[in-house]
Image (tube, rainbow, N blue to C red; front, side):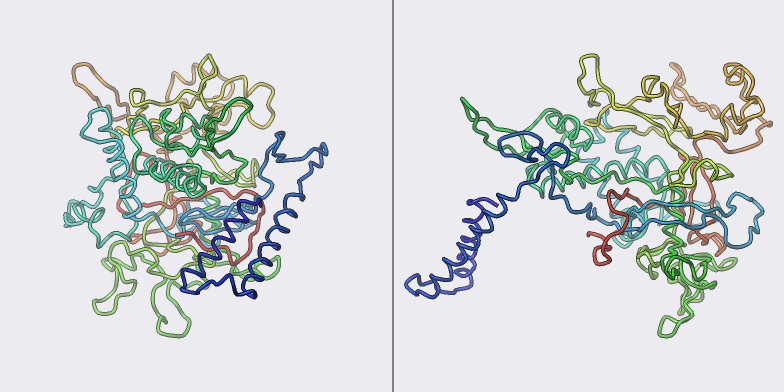
Length: 578
């Protein structure tokens, strides 16, 4: 604390007294003595804090010396919360079925796993939350501009998921996403790729606001972004001067006096500042299941007293305790043929399709709708077997290791409006890979792989289950196997889509009758059960899969975020930030 801060504090004290119509008479010696006493105490605190220097235990040098040298945030306390998230304390749990496998799929056998502490959205992502994303895309990348048309259109949910040949739902096709009556309902019609893109966008907007609150960016930054200059977290951390397309007017500056002149210096934050939060992302399957089971509510010291079937205690889907809620359903699901909500006048679950988030009680972690309402995408690529022999710590299948691209001169390669990468999904939907302002990415190469023992390739989605080494053709030439689709371990259909100079976009559906599986590296796991599922699917251990480019009216998603630092935090700080 310096003398300027001391002066400002004293000034604020006097101002507050004046604001409350308290007359300050400096002729009154008692009051004047009080002010002098406050000033002396503040000065002593200032001198004490200035003398309390942080000394490096490695070198004995002063850290954060105003004269120069090593600068580091030694006052960092804790990661804190980002908007919408609840803290999930990590630990060990039994991943997989706790009941009978009546479907006889054997794809969810029990095994012991450990999950690191993390954060998860308190609720599923709602229509209102997703509309904020669409509004931002529409303002920054106007769809009436042909150059950006596919950005906005590619992010739109598929509202036609509500249609069924023998069911009337045209009102939902038109109104479910945008009508204010459905604002707090979970968004549906979003495929896995779109969910990942939303999480990436949310990361940038949250960090942008945090930088504004910490006086690193100007307030007008969030309302004046353009296609040529939108904020990206990774670009800001790597090359801050390029964060807004090279326009530094939104970055707060400070006048710094040098030996010969006074210059305006950009006030930027680094990772070590603690201001930047980790990425929003989809939870892994292990994280999602751990959070849904919420064994913390059944813990007695270091053991479990019982194991829940659902995210709540007991084996019933109804609340069996006392009070006005006795007998009410604890989730939104299909109860029998033709019964989606119960009899009129006494609704079993208060919803015939989806329900507003927070309609039902949360689980012991404070998470809502971890069973029913909508299924939820998770990050993992689907495989029938989870290989706990290979990894029983923070299990995840889907790692594709990339690195930031730099040109030959060592400059960061930034995606521009003229170089937006697009991906044409198997169903023909065109969707952006990265937005302008983001750094270009590429797979890691031999430089990063050479002599490594923990991994030996960039794409690990089919590691030890689907790759050549795990198939019966392991001893054949990889090129010969790649040339023959029938030699793949998972003989799934290959639907081709390509551009033809004459016919435009050509969709080639795989009509081969010899396909034996739907599993490949582009099918993702979804869990949780939904408004149109029976109670069996409400169990957190149940797992299904769907191609990542498809969407339905019963699959939504929620975001997660990694936890840095301590495994535990104080209970009073577990609630989300609104």
